Image 1 (tube, rainbow, N blue to C red):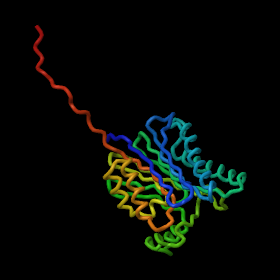
Image 2 (image 1 turned 90 degrees about the vertical axis):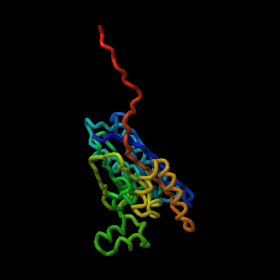
Image 3 (image 1 turned 60 degrees about the vertical axis):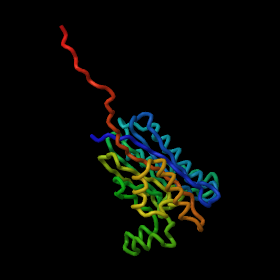
Image 4 (image 1 turned 180 degrees about the horizontal axis):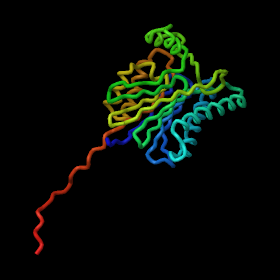
Length: 268
C-alpha cells in the first residue's frame, strides 16, 4: 500500500469588498483517528448576512465531525446532514435577523481507507488533481451550468456570461428543493491533491494552471501563490473575496539507515 502524509493549508483575501464573507477550516475527527475534513463556505446576503450564513456552515461542520464515528456513521450521511442542518439554521437566522443570508458549501473528507468523499452546494468548487494533471471538478449549481447541460451555451460562452454568478441552489432562504451533490474517489496515493475554492478565485484560472501550481509547491506555498496571482489578475475590477484550501498527499520517505553492521565474533 502506498504510504502518504496529508499536507494542508488555507488562504484568504478580502478582495475589494467591505467585508470578508467567505469562511474556511480544516478539522480532525476526535472519534475517528486518521480522518480529516476541509470545508469552505461563501456567504451572501449583504453586510453581516453572508457572514452569518458562512459561519453557520463552518460551525455545523465542526459539530458534526466532532461527533462522527466510522463505527456508526457514514461520511456521505454526515456530509448530507451538515448541508441540511446548516440550510435549516440559516433559514431560521434569516427570519430572526430580518436579513436574507445565503451560503454555498464545499466539504471534503479523507479517510484512512484511502478514500476521498466530498459534497457541494452552490458554486464553490472542489478540484481533484493526479500530480499536475486535472482529474475532475464539481459542477456549479448555477444558471449557466444548467444552460450548458441543456446545450444552450458552450463552455466558453458560460465562462464569460453576464449571468455567470446567478445560482440555482444555495443554503438559506429559497423556494427550491435543496440539491446536495456528492462525489467520491477511491485509491488515494502520493501525488494526489485537492483544491477547494470560492468563485473569487477559480474565475481567474484554467484547470491546468491550478494543477501545476499545486504540484510544484507545498500546500502553504501554493495557497500563497494562488491568492497573490488572483489579486494580480483581478486588478482593475471590483474583485470578490477569494478563499481556498489546499490538501496534498505527500509520499512518506523510507527511514534512512543510520547504523553499520559489524562482524559478530563466534561465542566460545
